[in-house]
Amino acid sequence: DVLTFASSRRSRNRRETASRKPARASRLGAQRRTPRSPGPRVPRHRDSVRSSMIAASAIHRVVPALPGARSSAASGSRRAALARRAVRGHVNVRAAVAEPDQMSIRTYVYDNLNAEERVEILKRPRVDFTSILGTVAPIVDAVATRGDAAVREYTSKFDGVDLDAVVVRVEDLPDPILDDDVREAFDVAYENIKKFHEAQKDVADVDVETMPGVRCRRVSRPIGAVGLYVPGGTAVLPSTALMLAVPAAIAGCKNVVLATPPRKDGSVVPEVLYVAKKAGVTHILKAGGAQAVAAMGHGTETCPKVDKIFGPGNQFVTAAKMTLQNSEAMVSIDMPAGPSEVLVIADRDAHPSHVAADLLSQAEHGPDSQVVLVVTPDVNLDDICAAVAKQAAALPRSDITAKALGHSYAVVVSDIAAACEFSNQYAPEHLIVNVEDAESLLPSLDNAGSVFLGRYTPESVGDYASGTNHVLPTYGYSRMYSGVSLDSFVKYMTVQELTKEGLDRLGPSVARMAAVEGLEAHRQAVTLRLGIE
Image 1 (cartoon, rainbow, N blue to C red):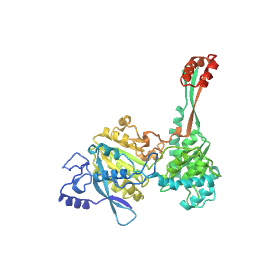
Image 2: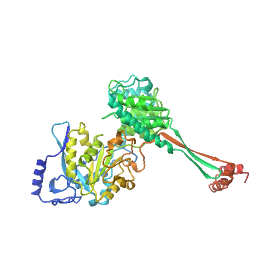
Image 3: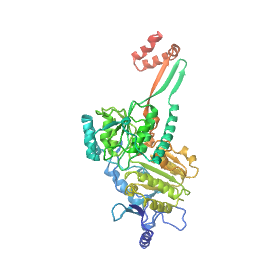
Image 4: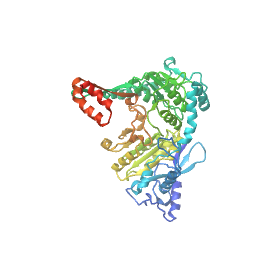
């Protein structure tokens, strides 16, 4: 399974054919190439227009729904029209089938876009949430009413596994057998994640005397019971178990339920079990999908009800989390979640193979992942194309990677400052800044789930073991949401304590404000203590 760019011979044939046709340069970034041009070098197709290394489909694709996300024919038409005007080239996608499938790729020259088009390219693909809810709602209701029996039924139906026990206590399970090098890798990640999240505990509480005799505090308390969803679809992610279980343990959550799809024999993936034991998980729910989320949200005969649910998942998991958050289950969630994504800012000195690897490492997450490359005009995109082709040819998940590249794109901007501004507008989950003196750009970066600065900081380190958390806001939600942290597993109470001197000083102001609002009992709660009318 490989994803490669069309051969140079085929490209030359197309160019020779195109050279005999009248030029039909697109208004959107279609710039005639001149010899030794300082502009971006990209694979050429018809009409000598520029293209990029990122494949992008003109089809209105389906992704997990989020608050406010709507599917509309008008939006799809605008996106398709924009795609038709994009600068085009071709890639050759060879999936599991023998015959390759040709699909267009596109790049945008940002300065050539009008205001509407600049807004349009920032949008993620959308979905009709109703169709997903139609599937998820009956599952959530069934688990709420029939408990473990419903979880068993759906696990058998969707995963092909017949469970004896839906939930097991971690302490009752034997220690998993792992290779020493695998165990050591997870131990290194555990220590780094623990160190970074423990440091966040030192700044939690606040104690201030706002005026003489008036003391105000903010104290933290752990959330009593939390549910951790660890995906197991196209890839099992024990690293997610680390990212969620470690801060839950540091926060002091008493009940920690980890839900993950079982293997075909009903057992738990050994690496996930190892992390669960090491990080203090109390229960493992051997189920995935909406049924697992519903079991944690409502509770069953064997699954403790949780107060908050964490973790990434597909559109059905996301829909179930959002459904429960707005139901009588009285459960909160970490954040809305869409497909995984990365935006890479690269300058002319960024190594093409490094840029390609960063793009592909995100694209291989899933077919709905999106990768965006933002470059300055002096970047050689031909070299990046070649690196993508070479690396993708060896990927075992190239079919998934090809689908992800199918709705991704590149943008050529005027300079690095413009690249930062575009990134802030896009608000990516992951932001890689592969430029000279990347640290100097950090003050200009406002919206990103996690930032990876410099030549030697691939996203992979944050995904696994640097210490930061990899459960991050997607779909543009980094504008207003933060990634998972220690704060996600605690809640804060404010405390105030007044002496008589404090009430003597503050009371008259409170009484007057209560009178203005017409709340007499509020006023008297102060004046009776002060002995005044």
